[in-house]
Length: 232
Image (cartoon, rainbow, N blue to C red):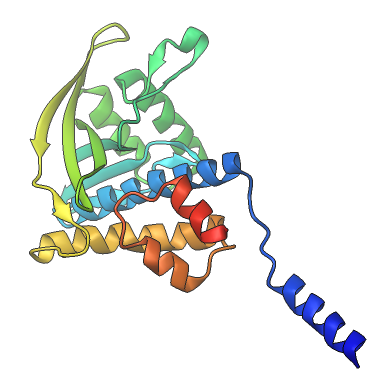
């Protein structure tokens, strides 16, 4: 009888053993969660301003935010925006890393790929706006700051060719307390932030329980140490 009880206890213990990811995997997955969350907030921010979102990514590459506005049946404005979390910077691609992310050349290369992949979508129309330099280019930064607040900062991107590239601050919103949003706009931003974080935490850190994830969402900046503490 004692052996049976012992065996049951061992099996029960094994069934509750969690497959804990390595430190590097935890950090990598948190980076994905944070990047995706910044992008979700960006989409909500622009859509509530009347912009129509169209897919700008091909797999995990491409344009984070591609939007347009219409007047009647015609496109009248185009917006290209890249989202960044915290202090992440724009990258480079191409030969010798000469093409900077969000430069006009980089955007046009991405548009060509989108046109090839989905020729039935209005990418060709949007590309003409970009070719004629009749579009808005923005860097959308979501940054965690003290007291469980997040802050949205938007930069204008100005470039002509590969050598001239400038990021100029355009708008910096007041910090938003993720646990006490003050108005409907802040509620929308926090909802987008937490819905995306919850989705990606469940996807990439499924070892965590629903209760643990809900607890993490009260924090504006989930870090590796927070995950490791829960998994001890």
